[in-house]
Image 1 (cartoon, rainbow, N blue to C red):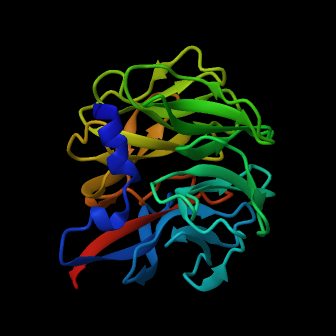
Image 2: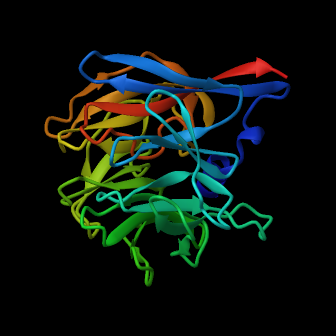
Length: 304
């Protein structure tokens, strides 16, 4: 029951998590590894989430109110991506390694309860194709060869990591631990899938072989660590760290910081100071194609 309640919080709408009488302000930042500094490129008095960086480096893709919007690296608005009837996108979306395909997690307008199905569409937009017949399913990663996607899904009340062909078909369960397994993402060399898992009683980063075998713990501290996003050089990953233990939840509106995990030594260093964020800050892969920068979102609140 704890897992179900925790994931219900994760999946709930922002309005349910913003304090009464307040409104969210969203700021899109780009962090430069060489300088160690963040640059704010866009601030708006509305809620947006989860930047991806296009594979050609020309724009960032964010979700806001169910739609996907393109933002230039300078913060210029480049319009809404055409996703056909898929108009309830959540913050789990991203591109194939070759940049030709976009994967979207979205609810369906005709279903009132919260749902999330996975779709694919051409990177420049069009009519999406539904891949997962079951809900909830949240996309997080794709293999370098573009043949397999990995995602977090609830089946029979338990959230685990699954794999499926990018052409659809049978889903394959990769984890079965007693606790939330989430955020699966392939390494650029295809040798590992990185996840965050509660299997030890604290949310930590793990990795496993693509078939789910040989799980290996990567972080060991007293923080709640989520969403390892592997850099193109396959040497480091960004992770989002909650300053206080959130058990199995990934809520909006907490003190967090972004850190860099060395994938060989398992050493971690801070990239940012603590700031107000969480759900929506960096759910999905957001590295620039050259691996020198990544994008993320900070939040603030104002009175209505």
